[in-house]
Image (cartoon, rainbow, N blue to C red; front, side, top):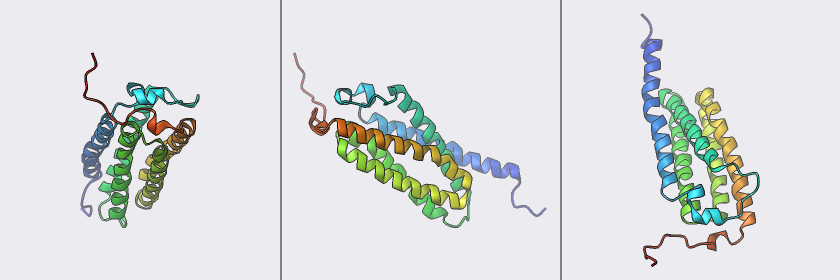
Length: 184
């Protein structure tokens, strides 16, 4: 026997990574999105002018759940590629883009930084693109799993840019916090 591990053992090792990375990505994404009310649950966001081509609110939850699942699978593939050249850099880029990604919802929906959101998405896109190329050098499948994410980031950037254009006073449209005072 010349193999260190059988194909079945290798598949199980990948599944062990995926069982951790997929729920972690989905749950962290959901948590970041729940720090402040988003979409139709956010009165400030409802008051903003939005383009006609904006998808319905439910589409964002479905898209992000799918994207975070794909991101978790891509990360599991790279984590499973032990000994691969560039693996540490690829994982570092993934973590960086993921943390910057998680900060977007609180910045936009919580702090109402509409103009900054456009720049923030550009930073996420640049980091995600670097991550995709780094993943592609290790395992092409992992890179392909990030392609829908790159597409969504382009769409989200255009949407944020259009919302910023339609709402030049978006940051001051409503106070950036909640009040603890009770009105009678």
